Amino acid sequence: MAPISITAAAIIPAAGSGRRMGLSTPKQFQEVAGVPLLVHTVNAFQAVPAVQEIILVVPPDHIDFVRDLLIRYRLLRVSAVVPGGARRQDSVKAGLLAVSAEIEVVIVHDGARPLVSPGLISVCIAAAHEHGAAMVAVPVKDTLKAVTNEGWVERTVDRTGMWQAQTPQAVRAALLREAFRFADETGFSGTDEASLLEHLGHPVRVVSGAETNIKVTRPDDLQMVRALLGPKENDDLMNFRIGIGFDAHRLVPERTLILGGVKIPHALGLLGHSDADVLVHSLCDALLGALGEGDIGRHFPDQDPGYKDICSLVLLEQVVSLVQGKGFRLVNADITVIAERPKLSPYFPSMQENLARICKTERERINLKATTTEAMGFEGRQEGISAQAVVLLAGK
Image 1 (spheres, one colour):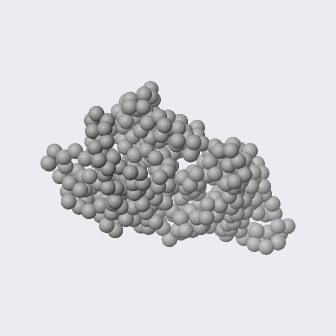
Image 2 (image 1 turned 135 degrees about the vertical axis):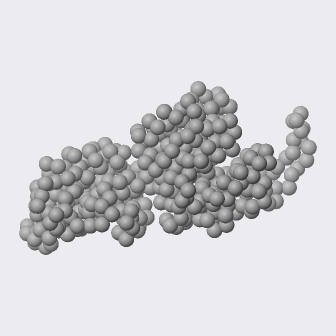
């Protein structure tokens, strides 16, 4: 997996028109499981902590449409939407111009490959960081035939050592800029980033990909992706995940009390590196636990100044992106807040609204409860507040 310390930017070329598939709407905007195909792709990259920027390269006449998608589907990690060019190479070059100077690795992925996993993205970034350049590929399984223009078999091609290129393809940022410069200087046109590196004379490390990492180029591909991403019979019975979360913070003066993203009038507030929202923290831990992804401290360490006083709803957004990137959805959450004071039930509707919006579910699937300890323990002595959460996830 790519260490979080690596800074990566993802360029997602999605500038195709869809004419080859006979579609009135470009393939990357076709809905799959109720969500545009491109959104599935972006969510996979949003679930990778190393990816600090996402640049979408889209048809010039769809820029406003894509910006609306960013708002509707809360694609918060997208840093730029730029118009694409006539060739894929032109589109990636346009995206590269939008990458920040401090980014170490640039990873390029076809917008029409929605089944890429966050794990594969991370491995590709790490390989590029180590070797300079890396690409995802799968070994050729079928017998290869050279065929004439007239449709006659000419010869059988030895498939030993033959691999089928996929994306993502990742390159150290400075090296990728050099490859594009050299291609422009020599008039070279490549089919992918690896071909530009070959032309430059730089080796490319191969990372084993997945047969399911399908690129939608024909109508049959779209049907296959719909079958893999769409609901399946008995999915809810076969792919459940349960997670439990707990968090507690001390009450102190001169801090704002925030629970469920709602500011609550009270003489004391919760002490913490972030806004110390124990309710949201317990939900994050429950979601991460259901995924087998550790806890909130692992993903958002309190030594990181970037999380100082951060709104915990922002952390929840990133955790939900991870949930979606791994192919799960929230079925329901049951959260209990343990506090002697203040009375919390009047604020529950606003909290439910916040949590349901970020978790992309209905309000009634977020159950909130409050209880006291009858003046016993640290909660009863009003030294702190704790929260417990239980969640149920189902595979999409």
